[in-house]
Image 1 (tube, rainbow, N blue to C red):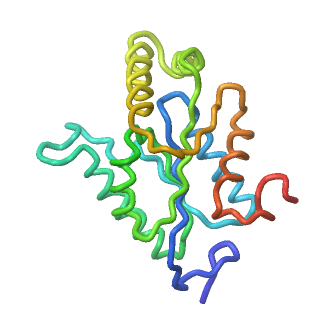
Image 2 (image 1 turned 60 degrees about the vertical axis):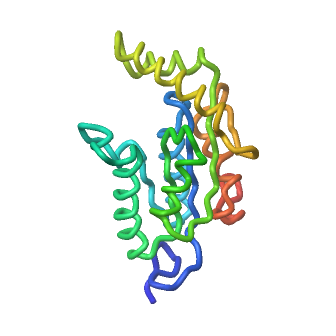
Length: 196
């Protein structure tokens, strides 16, 4: 049996450890996911990072006759099959995932036997507005802020009780990543930030 970054490859594992980082646009999901990935690389921990937006960047969207999540489900299943075939058992998946009850079902179909840890990132409206304006300008910023506010309303109405929440308003990306890694059972305590 060979190894991926010092871990067994080709062996049989009962579960996949998935960290789902979600929240409205502007809360810092992508930056945090990339920082979590960077920390895992530093710790020598094999993993895959997938950004949900890239799973269905297609026009028209949603494709006629399919549920809106179906392209993402199919693409995640194909991508995960490849990564699992390479011996990976950790997945960092980031995206808005406004309706977790619905979205976790298709994620479970795409990544069978996943033990999922979900962390919802949040920030007050003024912080989101500032971040969106730094990324987008003019009408694009206005439209994105409107979408972010809609996402926050949907999230507030549908998040299951007990969803882990981290407010990113006063946290730098590195500190947010530290919190998420500490909440994810897939990272051994001696590999967590600050453990060395």
